[in-house]
Image 1 (cartoon, helix red, strand yellow):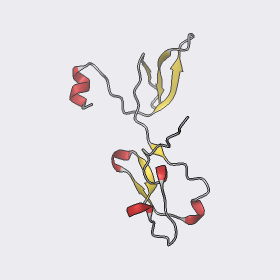
Image 2 (tube, rainbow, N blue to C red; image 1 turned 180 degrees about the horizontal axis):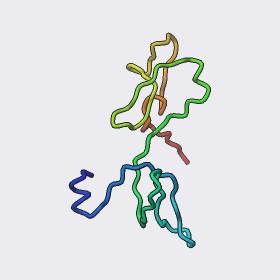
Image 3 (cartoon, rainbow, N blue to C red; image 1 turned 30 degrees about the vertical axis):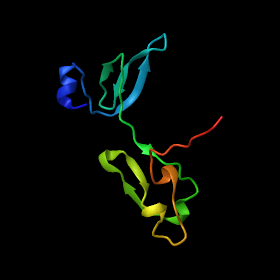
Image 4 (tube, rainbow, N blue to C red; image 1 turned 120 degrees about the vertical axis):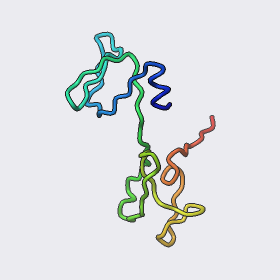
Length: 106
């Protein structure tokens, strides 16, 4: 949603990092403490996330990584069919496409 559309709906955008989410005594969202020391009361909170592939155990391969657009995270750099610049090493799934999900059947 654009800043103009947010403002038209009286939605305040705060770009300061959140230090802590605070709940009231009943467990409902009360607000957030920001890193600048401010407390902002909220009943609703929307956040932008960064996706990150689970790549434990692959560090030793030193595969090149690349940033995704709009600060959405990082992935392994690969070409068609998941080939990498290291001969014999391919990447697949969310290691190269962070939005990839695994389908399960029941």
